[in-house]
Image (tube, rainbow, N blue to C red; front, side, top):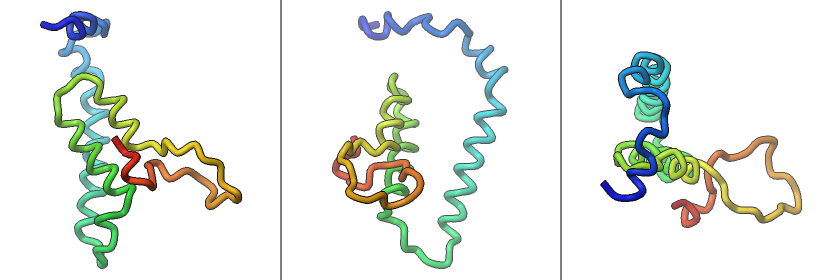
Length: 107
């Protein structure tokens, strides 16, 4: 066990079984919602978003969840964040994109 693993050990006051008992159904529903979204993407009449930056970021985030490496939350948040701090001359939309439009800026 390396030093970073030792530092994390016991940092959550709940045991794994208690975490599963309390939060499994909530997260099961969230995973099913993502699966439904991906199924809708597969069934869509036009296949024109395969390289769309938000969809690419989402697929990268899903892959990140499977790594098993500590720190997934931070890495996923960075994948689903626009890190560009450049001010726009004019607002281009009401809300945020939820991912970097510049894919090269995505970790």
